[in-house]
Amino acid sequence: MIEIRFHGRGGQGAVVASEILATAFFREGKFVQAFPTFGVERRGAPVAAFVRTSSVPIRLRCQIEEPDHVVVLDPTLVSAIQVTSGLKPGGWIIINSEHDPTDFTQFLDGGWQVACVDASGIAVKQELGTRTNPIVNTSVLGAFARATGLLQLESVLEAVRKGVPVRAEANVRAARAAFEAVRYSTLEEVQS
Amino acid sequence: MIVTTEETREVITGNHAVSHGARLARAQVISAYPITPQTQVVELLSSFCEDGSLDAKFIQVESEHSAMAALVGASSVGARCFTATSAHGLALMHEMLHWAAGARLPIVMANINRAMGAPWSVWTDQNDSLSQRDTGWMQIYCESNQEVLDTVIQAYKTAERVALPAMLVLDAFVLSHTAEPVEIPSQEAVDDFLPPYEPDLRLSTEDPHSFSGLATPDTYMEFRYGIQKSMERALEEFQRVDDEFYEAFGRRYGLIEQYRTDGAELLLVTSSTITSTARVVIDELRDSGRHVGLLKIRLFRPFPGELLRSLVANAKKLAVIDRNIGFGVGGIFAQEIRAALYNHIQIPVFGFVAGLGGRDVRPSLIREVIEYAETHEEPEDLIWKGVKL
Image (tube, rainbow over all chains, first blue to last red; front, top):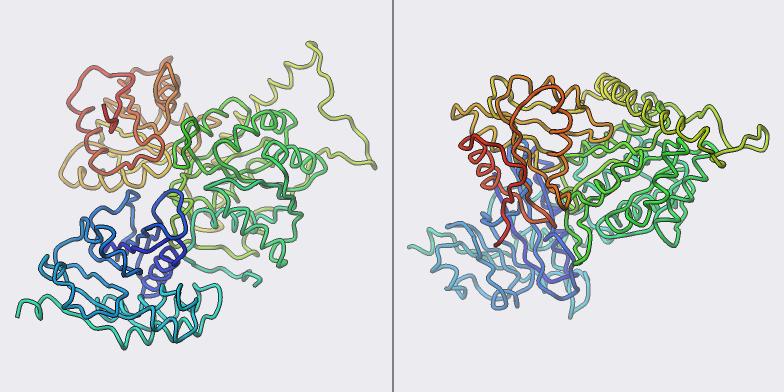
């Protein structure tokens, strides 16, 4: 079983991203579960959403405390909250950031792998959201597929087409662009 | 976008599984008031009504009391009726719940279990639905989103056969807001399984009758006797409907499910989603040679006491996990189980209370419950798990 945690801010689409990623794994024949932080959310406040995926039926219905991978939708969250809380050693941290993965030395030194993609820039180019409030949740999924290699880009794109309420093709282009543009530092690279 | 009428497999939340169940059952009148965490149920149903996927009258009312009152009227004329609510909404309906059952109306409702205030909570526990225990509604507790969708359809068939209302119950967030794969049956298959509602009597100007008028001491008691007799019949009907459902759709749930109980000396008893996590623990322990099994109580009203007795007859102990508390006594499922056993067989029943107000129930807690019951000889009525003291 693989467990993934999304960090975003209320209104950024972390919950939709988790459901789209679950649907993408489901399209590849996996069992899945996607859920938000249980409770009430406020626009702009830090929120989290979660995905479980497995090749066998998923029975666990408790919270995810020790995710295998983490996706960060808002770059300001990296310093605002502990995005690595409980993250398993060697796990991926996919960050929406203009920076280079090697800039996140605190994560690389911690034994995690880092991938960066300027999802905000990609979203603005595709006119998803506004310049000050871009909708980045579909772009980061393209980056996730490339960096982790856990699923095919095509599965993500199909799930995006089905899962976004409006402007499906612009979201598909954004996910594809992020897949192409993502920069990442694997553990092997860091260690060498 | 009108939804497909073909069978599909989709990743959907428990809330939307409820909505699809009501759509496939061809509910004709839906009356509802939104409340977290139920809101998405009626949101999707209202969009089904708006886009033509469902030919139903959607009535947005000013309170849950009115929601149920509207359905009492609609059901009396013979319409198939649906609503959904949670916690304080259900509490506000209380008077009308008695009325729906007393008037013998087979209304189906989904209640998303949410803890009662004060203090405010939106998270899951079972005190809202269990507080409605004696209203005359059937109650079915669900473990997965698939079971939720299937139970809406099963509930209509059973309710209409015994002329009593039915409440299906699912955990806030753990099911309501969790998306997972669900097989959504075709409309044709559900139509074959669930015939249109045809009551023996209905409110009609063509054939006038008087309904629910004053019942003097000379007649009232017989109405209560009738409800009890129908509840007893509902046990058999619910089992029959589950069997018919299996033939039609290949899925069944039972009234009480046994999970890996062969030769079990200790039986863990759960309901709702705690069951799902408990399966993982039971698998681990069975595979390491421990004599422990699991019973999932799905049907709470009518309570399948006789079935329970037959399933526990060979066990040495029971450990019940309650996500609820009957203040002044203890866990409510544990009480019901002891009451069902007392006159018939003597088995120690350990009563655990856990997970109130949505507190996470993890495998480690379930392991502790089993460990405690295995290593203690004298049963205890109330053992708190996971409470910070």
